Amino acid sequence: MADLTHFDGDGHAHMVDVSGKPVTDRIAIAEAHIKMLPQTLDLVEQGTAQKGDVLGVARLAGIMGAKKCAELIPLCHPLPITKVAVDLMTDRDLPGVRITATVKTSGQTGVEMEALTAASTAALTVYDMLKAAEKSMEIGGLRVVLKDGGTSGHYRADPGGGDEAPEGSMS
Image (cartoon, rainbow, N blue to C red; front, side, top):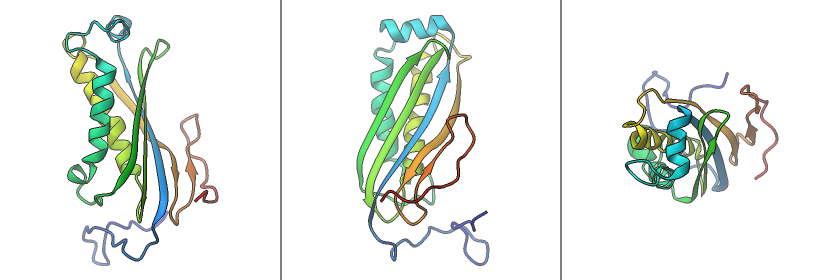
């Protein structure tokens, strides 16, 4: 297990100094899902939810969440994000909505936290927009599925939920 970088030699939390790291292209993709009753999913698919376009509003909320990550997570660096894409797809087999958030930057530290924040913010927004119809919805599966760039190289999660070993960097 790697040393935890957010603690100094005395065990105090601190923001990591990335000033000596090279600027590289970085990407992270995170996913989450929100399970709901089939009749609640009908509201999403038919566009009849009381609060309006559930997926459209959740997409915007996810983008905004990525941009606010450093304000929410105490030791995250504010980053010059170059791309945020949040995709939401209904899934009858779940039943519910699957969320994928992709974040890119050219910088000295990665964007995993921004991708996770985007996916979770989108999921929370789906919940908020549908809670009048169903309070028992369940948010889950939040994880990084891809990370690339920087000195730690390439990581891709096992589609089955386990982790694969890091691969050589694609940057």
